[in-house]
Image 1 (cartoon, rainbow over the protein chains, first blue to last red):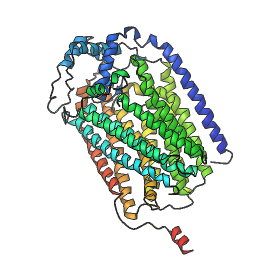
Image 2 (cartoon, rainbow over the protein chains, first blue to last red):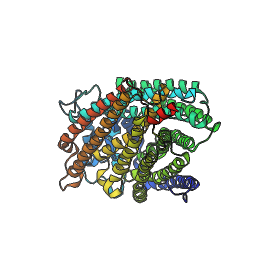
Image 3 (tube, one colour):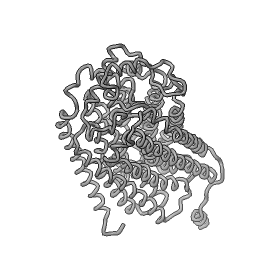
Length: 145
Length: 466
């Protein structure tokens, strides 16, 4: 680089640029968080849903599935599974319940988690809640996730 | 080696390489599970193997960063490490915590691990990459604080160079942003939003500071180019990294229920993210071309150049490929993401750690550089791992394009599992490339034990003669 562009100038760009954008980043969440109630389906965030989310977490569901596109890419997207299963929490529960303990020969299979009826209901309600989040451009592109 | 205490880095590097081997073994298992769905089921289900694969990566890179800091900072600060003892104690704590966590993943069901570690008291488990039990997370914070304190005291009481200050900024950022991993709200949108404050601001933010400073350090050492020149490059690279990367976080806020303006902010700023990586490539080649000396460690120079190129391809090019919102609408959460993730992590962070190991390990073992045969073996491992990673990325990209078409783009979209079956050929080829990567890694480990003739350069002979 030529001498007209000095190390001091490079340093100032670094300090100025990063401080400016860090402040912007700290400011934007305030706006985002304030605007969320319009999209985040929090009116349906019940105790049951929260319990379902905890079950989702402590069984590491994200280790195979994606939820709103984030997670692992080994098993189907679940952010719209409620819609895909005909808006039926019963269908979701039946699917989870019916997984064979020893898997399916030669194929991927979801483990059998032996959930109680109440736990199944909580998970299904959590997935229903997740499906109710309003996403830009109505992602995913179609029902297949 | 100028300072005795630099040698504490060796412990960290050995652990890093050991865990790296574990990570790749699980990678090969995962690749096989993609095509043989019942492989190791139900003993090691996919999610468990994946946790082990990704967590080992994070832990060994952290070992690598810490080792690098312990090696580089005393030399830059022109003083011994503030406390070598603290560095050793933290090493064993971190290793024990890491090993116990991985064993926990493998030996008991994840829900049981959550129960044993009393996740209910402060639930933080079960989020991607941050699956560690809460107690492990607390351990990570303690180790990180002790580490930053140790390094910080060394830097602040010694000579302050641009390289060590940038490194310190990166390390402090790493520790600070990790704290977001303790915030797990019930609201899924908020949860996802702040989860990225750890994940994105690490790998597309502060880690780039760490990476650039390590690269700058090794380049000064192997090329002898004037520090002023290197520091100017370093400033402008990290300036661009943060200017593009901080608001680039927005490219993760497209489809998680956050306001629409993120589509614009995320697209525009993340589209700039390849720039710092491209500058790193220019930087590396520029200073190697202008070198004022020939360092006998050819392997380290190769790693340094390789890091710059592969980081640009993996993080820059493959990142840009799917970062614009209209494209990401189709590619989000597909094998395209997996392709990008693999080459970006390898190119930027795996390779920069291997660069500093390659440069410093021989010195800590009492030589200026590895012997000629060892360097040849190491360079073979470089090419095997790097080329096979290129192919892993290409095969996953192929799989991803086909997946996007079949599942999301065509007029008659297919279901997820039906689509996966159509991708089998790509997955088999990816697995093949993964096995070659493992062979390259075995060769890499071997290179530390190969005996041979010492490398003597012309200029050293002249110096010795004069």
